[in-house]
Length: 429
Ligand SMILES: Nc1ncnc2c1ncn2[C@@H]1O[C@H](COP(=O)(O)OP(=O)(O)OP(=O)(O)O)[C@@H](O)[C@H]1O
Image (cartoon, rainbow, N blue to C red; front, side, top):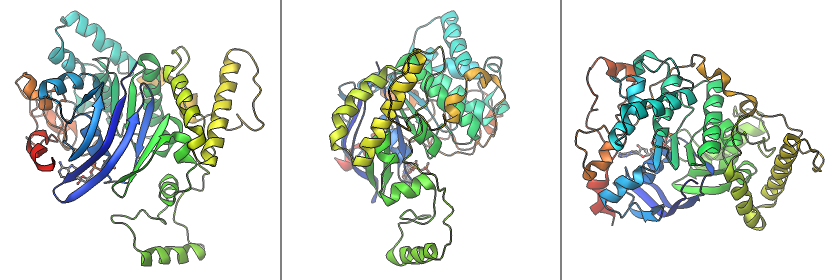
């Protein structure tokens, strides 16, 4: 069973810029979670803080009983082995084949022999639909394939917690559906706790058990997906619909004058460009593909949510009851029974992602927009626990991996590191 991650009163700043404050949430064991929020609200910073690449000013991150904000480098090194991280563009070494990239954590962190490593690597290569591409360099494949290779690498150590930073970035909607399905299938197979950082509303609607949202330096909410999807909070509604009218602005918060102008434009029938979809009509959650085990977390999630139910808004309660009834109907249908469900339940179309199979994963991946930026650190030569911070998460440098391929040899990045544990520890505490 995946490991629970409990975040308490977490605050993070860079100098005088507070990124978010007093964030408290729990990623329940084996459940799939999504973290939404407008650009720049600190979702990636949050993810990096969960793995100890960034040190918070205050608060704790408890992973498997250890507060990683306080533990020693040696303990952190051990705790990090529980994590598999999918970075935004796969974060592959441009000078290594996909095979070597995927084998990398096994060679670094285990004493497995090469034939055992080959077995595991090829199993993961097959899982993500990259069979036949394992000898290619990252620069020779599309962004979607790189993303899947990054996922394969994140999985080789059988992680208990999987963190995915924008798994959909640079992917077309169909490839996004495949990678989302893959995450659900993986969850069904290994019961890992998953956190997906995303802007993608389809993912948010159909993949997670729980959703959180960051806005204005705070966690606006975190809970069962139905709570956010049925929320009447203006910021949530605006984010889901993608409308330019609302509290979220291009860069800063909007002031009252701007809000009044927008209201006048709306009154005059001018569109803010958002979808008119009704998000309170809950889409069925994507299920594991046929042949996969059932997701063990579903039962645990249900038990938890039943306890939470009376404390939730009425609209969320109703949506949850309908979701549960619909799940029961599907389960009964799969068992060949007919279940008694409330009128109207089950009427919504299955989501596209839910209807997909994994069979086409070998198809060439689509759009390649690998210009995502981030600052994860490069691998160093040393292997001592004190190097845990830089050693466990392979190279990442701005720009496409193809640029790196010409460098030859192992890529060591440019020294820019997302790891501020050493530098900042003394500042905030
Ligand atoms: N190492 C760093 N040093 C200083 N500021 C940083 C650092 N890393 C991130 N920031 C700042 O923290 C803020 C949040 O960045 P972050 O990348 O977490 O946002 P995000 O919500 O993931 O955005 P997006 O959705 O666009 O990817 C930004 O203002 C960014 O400039």
